[in-house]
Image (cartoon, rainbow, N blue to C red):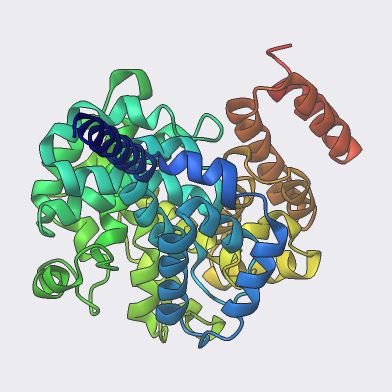
Length: 414
């Protein structure tokens, strides 16, 4: 009898050990799953892209597909498919990136930042900080600056992280814009010229006309701040501080397009003249130019059918189209501001191949604008590019007449 009890006890112990091991395996980190099973499997990517080709070609269904894929195979895997996928023209890749990033946060929390890349214009890092705020509330304000310093990409990635945070702040305060301004002010630092604050407000502006993170509350509140008869109302409101207005005028552009008659979020050249007219009515010179530039920022993406994965592969014909769209502004001031902001959009903090910026500048309609275009490019390179070898390459690649300007402006660190 004692022997049977011993055997029974051993069996029970084995069951307990097996159960504990099973639970432990079930709690293995998502990163182990990624490292050992899913990522870097081109055959698997191709299989899922074939399935994607059968999904109805609309944003909602495509988003649902990528959310489902993220749940089944992991968000990092879904990002790899998104990088490769053949999608319909004018699909908003940045918002799709947000949808996948939402799932990454659910799977990894703040640690998900280590899987992010600058792809899709920093959508991944945006959604990590958004998810943290919506889940954990005010305590995140004590951590977000440190977390954003881990955002992948060049020197601009840190402050752009706060653009994403602004989306979340607005949803967190249930689309109360004056309150979002107070909260965004908490993240600004003297080290970065308070730019964290400004970018946070800019992200909130974008969220205000999209309502991505809480559509029901957004529908209740949006008419308090948005007016299609006065699309600049939000930027000109008394509660909008002067130091945040620049970023409001920068990111209000899609709503300007909507007020001018864009259908389903896809503006076409026939409404650009009316869109520019809203900027023309701004009294302050600086803000008027920012508004003109905001349209240019969007033109660069629209000419590429919104495929922000391949901005540096734009053909000269597409770049010439962008130049022609900026000329619809009709004034020297508007045209110049529009054209120069296109340059910023193409260079994108050094995340895109610099050759597209060089090709774009050579297509300027006159020498004065060409000089201004290269001057802005060199200022961007000087700020964002830390590799002296790349700086040298750029100065060698620009047209000969700009070699000296390039050397003077961007080689000072060597």
